[in-house]
Length: 532
Ligand SMILES: Nc1ncnc2c1ncn2[C@@H]1O[C@H](COP(=O)(O)OP(=O)(O)OP(=O)(O)O)[C@@H](O)[C@H]1O
Image 1 (cartoon, rainbow, N blue to C red):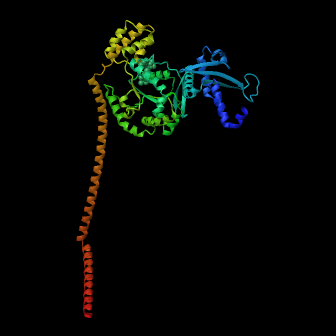
Image 2 (image 1 turned 45 degrees about the horizontal axis):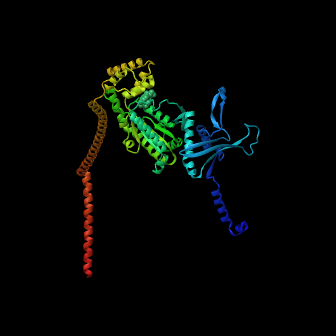
């Protein structure tokens, strides 16, 4: 029968049938991924990410784990646990099962020579169901990389990069800002909204792709100095575990510089531009005469400054980012901070430019309670009522000022008394908070300064146009007198005997010439008549 089957059924059909039968009989619907330690001669980052991720997934099925200490630098430091060769770790993710095993083999041509000298190839074997193959490449492995990244950042800390004009590159420093959302005094509802917004952003890779937008989000933080804008940036960085790139726009001179600067930043990071208003205008109430004069000068120079900026403008930068990051940047956050939102170019404030605007205001009583808890470890205290009373009087205090007072002593009573004293002094030293009328006046002062500066400019314009008119009039009179002069000169020569003799001579010549012409013509006519 076999012989007959082999002879009558063609080879291709036979192997196809065999394949199908094999698949049917074999219970395995497994698929295996291999993650080697090297990828095309380079270190394979997926291999290292798996190495960091798997020790966090130790479960009942794990039979061994490598632990140890590192005695380099004479300090006995624990080394992160690692997966032992041959041991299997099972990871359940989104209801799917993934089985990892680490393998090792001596590399070809390794040369041998003991444990440390011999080169070994290592690879992870990942077994999953065939139906999950796409899920692994699209979702599971990116998840592994992300978690590993977070673990490494937690372990090694974040970095803050500043752009150095000289080297033309980013200088990294360890970023260890203790600010978190728990330590930040801000409106609780606003804080929760922001946390939700950030959490949603990091999960929305596919959403951003599907709507054809760059995976980025822009936040504008505004409010008076000392209200916690920088602290909020740090809290966001700590929450997301993102590195921070702190960019001074003035240090970037051209578009090509900007391209280099931005392409050198990594994904999953924050690009920070602080104090973006950079304006000298102030709307503070009660300005001294010197301050007002100073303002006038600054406002006067503002136009010149604007026209002389030859670098990159903020709006140019944001346009550039839109283009660049839609092609080569993922999971980017841009944060702008300003003390004066009203001074920003309206183009920056239009919808779609900065996705979220966050106002950091003066310290509320809720904010004080949080700071008291953070700095003094007290949630309730008899003197809180007194602080609340002072706050209700509307004396503006920033969280920075409150924090400064609370830090003065470990004794809550002493610190809170110090804060109350601070309120008293502030009330005596400072004018009461501006009423609406005063705010309007303050606005008027600002406007007045601007108007005066503009009036001065207009005055200058008028003066210069006057001098032009004067020049034209003088020019006209000059020509007028020149013509008169020539007229008189000709009249004078007309009456002069030499001139009249010359004229009469010329007249005689002309008359005799005319006579001769007439006689010749008459003679010619006569001759003609004679022939006729
Ligand atoms: N909202 C806040 N919650 C907790 N601490 C705060 C807050 N605001 C300010 N602080 C404290 O005051 C210090 C200075 O605040 P921060 O630099 O964050 O303010 P800022 O608004 O960025 O000021 P500037 O506009 O001058 O840069 C912080 O280190 C922090 O200790």
